[in-house]
Image (cartoon, rainbow over all chains, first blue to last red; front, side, top):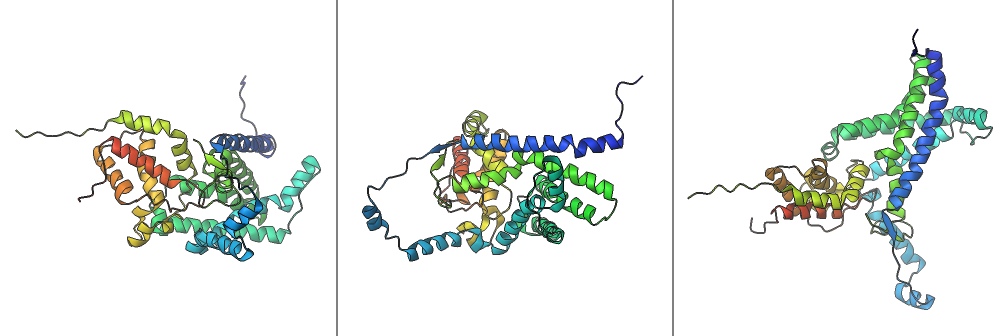
Length: 235
Length: 126
């Protein structure tokens, strides 16, 4: 009599599609919250100089609408939009699609509706499909950039390729499954597994730049910060 | 009589600096996506024929980053090479622009502190 039996593929599939998804979401969500708090604990509030009156403020800054806009545009001039417009555009499109495509995908929303009877609005299938193609194309652009651009290659490690692959693989397998290219069942299992892997890795790897970006650029006072930050690093 | 001066690395002060600033170094290293978008913000990179060794990310990864990963156990030659990166290839003008907001100059400053603790300084009379 054996106590340990290898579960059948149907049972495995049930686990991958069921409990593992929720575990991945819980780890990801909990991890993001915990890591964000950890990061915020590394900062402290900085007292900002207070100006006594509006009149004093006006006399010191002469903040006319023209000046304000000139300042805002000059900030853009020292950002990557000026120095590297192609990369800035590609990475912006990549990151927007990376979030929008899975969130507003019809098939995901149907699953969400079946589980909780609530769902987001959905894009048309054609639009989601195009966004997936855009993500794969952008991923390929990053891949080529890592190989052929000298300054990128010199700091690239094997992990960078791995992270790029993990980020793109849910979209690649999803695309292949949707179009029934290769074995549909295998692709959908790989799609779910790679998605779960990416979710779990989000708070504990380089993918956490997703949160770090907003904390360091919008909450920390620095030359390149955006918005009105009021904190400083206190490691 | 000819003395052969053997310069060894004293890892204790290196470890102490690394431990004091562990959180900062770890965060900087783990958040750097190796995107190389900081390159153009360095005037030395631009004026040295776009040599990638002048790129801010390269400079901090290969100095403080390497020291952190090796827990300070590096050879004197390696440390001298690092000294070249942090003293000669960076002037700490603090103009580097990281899209993620990593404070690269402060990491390079830590690299300089470690180099100084081992007798590696900027050589003005080279």
